[in-house]
Image 1 (cartoon, one colour):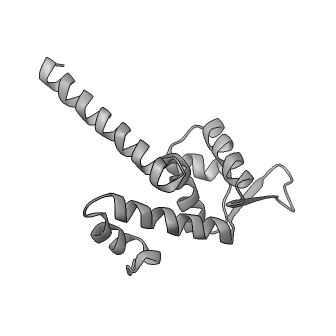
Image 2 (cartoon, rainbow, N blue to C red; image 1 turned 45 degrees about the vertical axis):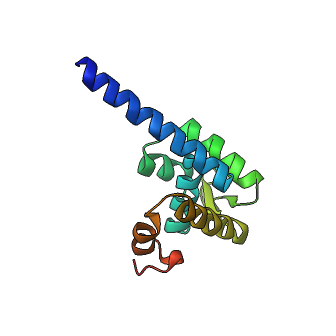
Length: 128
């Protein structure tokens, strides 16, 4: 890589890091927590394994984040009836409210995000 390419990559990474910190400040959740909560809501009921595969996160990362989200009351974890090894995740009402509030905070914090969010997030007035 050339020096110019490395500098450009460094600027992109710094901007992404700053945006992640602003998101955490505005929503009280990390980008990874928001992604997992949003994906569980989209799927209605799922397992940590499916979330890890869908989002391409490591299984231990998903497990840790799910524990934090469940501890905050945003997710429920229930063992499968037929296979007790499986854990099923569902978003709670508190999780739905937190996700809606977080997405609203993103729309307010990121210029132009409202236009993109409304077309891809039904809870924000879109039709997707």
